[in-house]
Image (cartoon, rainbow, N blue to C red; front, side, top):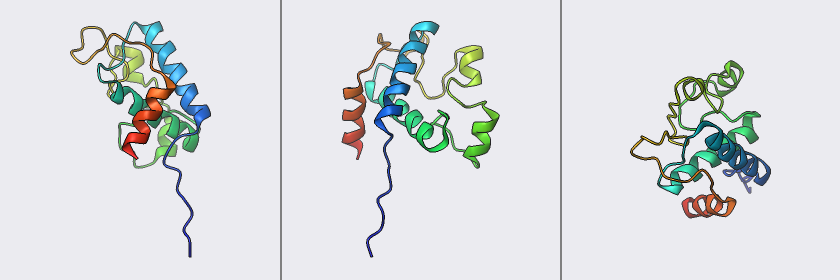
Length: 121
Protein backbone atom coordinates (compact mmCIF):
# COMPACT_ATOMS: atom_id res chain seq x y z
CA UNK A 1 0.00 0.00 0.00
CA UNK A 2 1.33 3.43 -0.96
CA UNK A 3 0.96 6.11 1.69
CA UNK A 4 -0.15 9.57 0.59
CA UNK A 5 2.45 12.29 0.49
CA UNK A 6 2.31 14.81 3.28
CA UNK A 7 2.76 18.40 2.15
CA UNK A 8 5.58 19.82 4.25
CA UNK A 9 5.93 23.08 2.33
CA UNK A 10 3.64 26.02 1.93
CA UNK A 11 1.70 26.95 -1.18
CA UNK A 12 3.40 29.44 -3.49
CA UNK A 13 0.40 31.77 -3.14
CA UNK A 14 0.68 32.05 0.64
CA UNK A 15 4.47 32.06 0.54
CA UNK A 16 4.38 35.11 -1.71
CA UNK A 17 1.65 36.71 0.44
CA UNK A 18 3.71 36.25 3.62
CA UNK A 19 6.89 37.48 1.91
CA UNK A 20 5.10 40.61 0.75
CA UNK A 21 3.46 41.16 4.16
CA UNK A 22 6.82 40.77 5.94
CA UNK A 23 8.55 43.27 3.69
CA UNK A 24 5.77 45.84 4.03
CA UNK A 25 5.52 45.39 7.80
CA UNK A 26 9.28 45.76 8.27
CA UNK A 27 9.29 48.98 6.24
CA UNK A 28 6.24 50.36 8.05
CA UNK A 29 7.63 49.62 11.52
CA UNK A 30 11.28 50.53 10.90
CA UNK A 31 12.42 46.99 11.65
CA UNK A 32 14.85 44.79 9.74
CA UNK A 33 15.21 41.13 8.89
CA UNK A 34 17.84 39.01 10.60
CA UNK A 35 21.38 39.37 9.25
CA UNK A 36 21.21 35.63 8.43
CA UNK A 37 18.71 35.35 5.52
CA UNK A 38 17.94 31.70 6.28
CA UNK A 39 16.29 32.77 9.57
CA UNK A 40 13.99 35.12 7.67
CA UNK A 41 13.26 32.50 5.03
CA UNK A 42 12.37 29.78 7.56
CA UNK A 43 10.05 32.07 9.52
CA UNK A 44 8.23 33.30 6.39
CA UNK A 45 7.87 29.69 5.22
CA UNK A 46 6.41 28.78 8.62
CA UNK A 47 3.93 31.65 8.50
CA UNK A 48 2.84 30.61 5.01
CA UNK A 49 2.45 26.98 6.05
CA UNK A 50 0.26 27.99 8.98
CA UNK A 51 -1.78 30.20 6.66
CA UNK A 52 -2.30 27.15 4.41
CA UNK A 53 -3.20 24.82 7.28
CA UNK A 54 -5.02 27.14 9.67
CA UNK A 55 -6.11 30.09 7.53
CA UNK A 56 -4.00 32.44 9.64
CA UNK A 57 -0.27 33.22 9.97
CA UNK A 58 0.20 31.82 13.47
CA UNK A 59 3.71 32.37 14.85
CA UNK A 60 5.73 29.33 13.72
CA UNK A 61 8.32 29.62 16.48
CA UNK A 62 6.16 28.50 19.39
CA UNK A 63 4.64 25.22 20.53
CA UNK A 64 0.85 25.14 20.83
CA UNK A 65 -1.34 22.53 22.48
CA UNK A 66 -4.25 23.63 20.28
CA UNK A 67 -3.33 25.62 17.17
CA UNK A 68 -6.98 26.29 16.22
CA UNK A 69 -7.67 27.82 19.63
CA UNK A 70 -4.55 29.97 19.32
CA UNK A 71 -5.62 31.21 15.89
CA UNK A 72 -9.01 32.16 17.31
CA UNK A 73 -7.43 33.96 20.27
CA UNK A 74 -5.31 35.92 17.73
CA UNK A 75 -2.58 36.74 20.27
CA UNK A 76 0.15 34.87 18.36
CA UNK A 77 -1.09 35.63 14.84
CA UNK A 78 1.64 37.56 13.03
CA UNK A 79 2.27 40.30 13.85
CA UNK A 80 1.75 39.03 17.39
CA UNK A 81 0.75 41.23 20.31
CA UNK A 82 4.32 41.53 21.70
CA UNK A 83 5.49 42.73 18.27
CA UNK A 84 2.64 45.19 17.84
CA UNK A 85 2.93 46.58 21.36
CA UNK A 86 6.68 46.48 22.09
CA UNK A 87 8.45 45.54 18.82
CA UNK A 88 9.51 42.22 20.38
CA UNK A 89 9.66 39.47 17.75
CA UNK A 90 10.36 36.03 19.22
CA UNK A 91 10.99 34.66 15.70
CA UNK A 92 13.66 37.26 14.89
CA UNK A 93 11.75 38.20 11.75
CA UNK A 94 11.26 41.86 12.68
CA UNK A 95 14.25 43.25 14.53
CA UNK A 96 14.85 46.78 15.75
CA UNK A 97 18.04 48.41 14.42
CA UNK A 98 19.72 48.14 17.85
CA UNK A 99 19.33 44.34 17.95
CA UNK A 100 22.70 42.64 17.48
CA UNK A 101 21.15 40.18 14.99
CA UNK A 102 19.44 42.83 12.83
CA UNK A 103 20.61 43.03 9.27
CA UNK A 104 20.16 45.93 6.89
CA UNK A 105 17.51 44.33 4.68
CA UNK A 106 13.76 44.81 4.66
CA UNK A 107 13.31 42.67 1.56
CA UNK A 108 13.89 39.03 0.68
CA UNK A 109 13.33 37.35 -2.66
CA UNK A 110 10.95 34.47 -3.18
CA UNK A 111 13.89 32.65 -4.78
CA UNK A 112 15.97 32.98 -1.58
CA UNK A 113 13.11 31.60 0.52
CA UNK A 114 12.66 28.64 -1.83
CA UNK A 115 16.40 27.95 -1.93
CA UNK A 116 16.54 27.79 1.86
CA UNK A 117 13.43 25.60 1.98
CA UNK A 118 14.82 23.23 -0.65
CA UNK A 119 18.19 23.00 1.10
CA UNK A 120 16.48 21.84 4.28
CA UNK A 121 14.35 19.15 2.61
